[in-house]
Image (tube, rainbow, N blue to C red; front, top):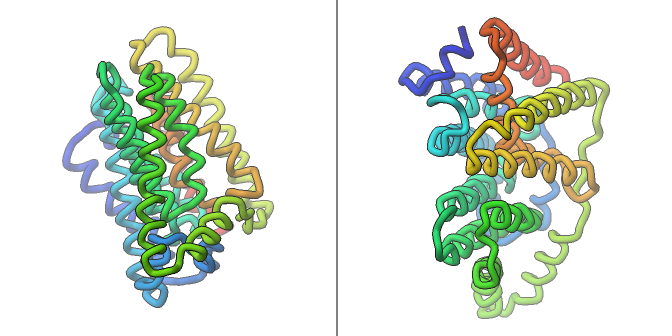
Length: 326
């Protein structure tokens, strides 16, 4: 049974995860059928370096996005197991992360969000580590610095600083000093970048690129009937998962309760962002972090093992169908 296989932290589950990921990425690896993302035409500084090297090498670009997806799968598992968000060691959240980012082939294409997401995840983990520290300023600085560095790949990632500040507030890390440290962390990557471009007399180009990336609308995907059905079912699954997790919050440890609140707010923020003209499908790797954890917890709460297997098989079949229909 699939759920039973992945709901433990052993070598079989760890070996199956990259094999399944390659299978779901096969179409993207073999065929370059998805359109270019708008970021390619007015790239942020670090993303410009990447596309300059990989623009003509579709296979390498797809392999890099696959590798980052694999890293994210293990990162989601690590944060769940390290902070005891489930009742035991598990690989289910990583499996669900893979499924959530595999439905849209376009989302598998290498784009700047794939490079932003691991840095954003690192920022979240820095703040989780800071919980309980009497002097959290350095952790808050680091978290904001990594997020800001990631935004030099994906400009609109800078707005996820709201999530960083929300985490600081929920974990009681928010003080005047930690907030100032966070602001310094945000500013430093841009100050260094500006100094570099200023040295080569390109400061105006840098400022105009950053400004345009910050404010320009990005929505470019026109949904079909199949994509609307897919989105509707996924949203419904996420909704019932959130309700299920919220129901158990009073019965779990306070710190674990806070962690779940953080991931639920990440889901909500990502969904709200995705329905605005300034974001689109590119946020799926970010949205899938919280969603994989919450949906995985919902599956683990089902009392009948057969229901867990049915739900997981349905999600897998649904993801495969989405790859062919959307």
